[in-house]
Length: 492
Image 1 (cartoon, rainbow, N blue to C red):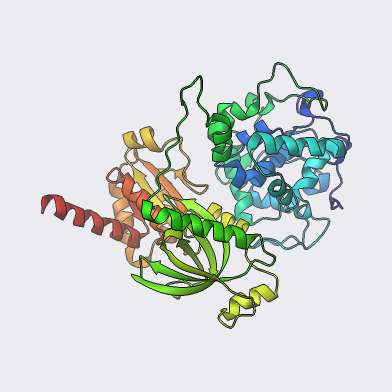
Image 2 (cartoon, rainbow, N blue to C red; image 1 turned 180 degrees about the vertical axis):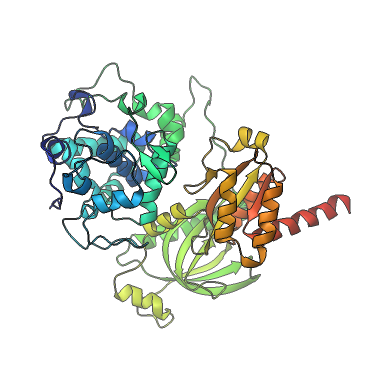
């Protein structure tokens, strides 16, 4: 059942957002309805659509709220138009019910009339209609390389039932995409949307009829290289063209040949375990590079990730360091694996408790953590990172690239404020003095990162010597010590 809205809507807005008979954009004049075509969703995606599909869909709803007829009808219960400038807090208070939580946590399902209760399915249904829903799902899965069951499960999630940080980040992404203007801490809708939002979008073909002039979307560059779904790439371009292999993909993989069979065995073992109901916990014998010992760990296997040249198991339970409850286990370092019963006495109390409460973690939780903070070791503490790049290096290698959702350029003057807010007290004054000695013409960036994550540290090392860590001070000291050691190797 679609949750009811709490705010009175104008007839035009009611038609565009809630009527099952709403027509696609190509059948409307102007932006009466903005049809969520696969191409538009792909263009709204930063990163991989398979991971960020719901966020792309939410950005589409933002565009509907901001630019389709009836814009502003949700503001103050439709009694006055949206001001030319608005802050996130003003939007939140106008959009949600008064009892909507204002903290940093994901809001619970607190009020069926609050718009945070609406599923992604409901938002799309209000535009494409019941008859067009199946065709829309089919088009998204076919053209953007998403598994049907996975996409349908995601559509059941609440689109705006996310953290405050995620919603505020939506506004930042809209600004980066050129779909919203920013003035200080406030935002302003554009006078007119860019042409790429409107085109190319065509009316849906009648079932059984194909457009003779429209090329398949799967092979278009904006989908092929924006999505980087390797399954789709292999299917489309894996075969030679006129007898010559024209498309090549090289993925760094550090696992030595002698360990590849073991890694494949572990992958197959997890694949078989994940098909069981319930999925059992496992006892791993793991060789830790950090601890330099092999230790037994009882964990719940959540999912596998390929990250920076190797495949990892994200496990919830015991860790090799005996600290925390999460750990990324590199598959080629697993020496033995044994499935256990949920009644086994070897299970840690907190893991067995989560099982009894039916609250075992899911891959989406890990994905959300990695989206909110830069770093694969999503269980490490988050810190604010401040970086400086020499201007020429920045223009050639950093500007216009995507590193993480939180990785963004900031003005020179803002660096001082960030240092005062986040630097360790014992480093604050020295970092401020350092900042004053650096050129305002250089490029400065901030990001939230996982402190201690080796993948982030390797990226920072790759940027040396033209990329400088300004903050936090302890990380800067680590980088400085490494540089000193390197200098000794080459010039000692």
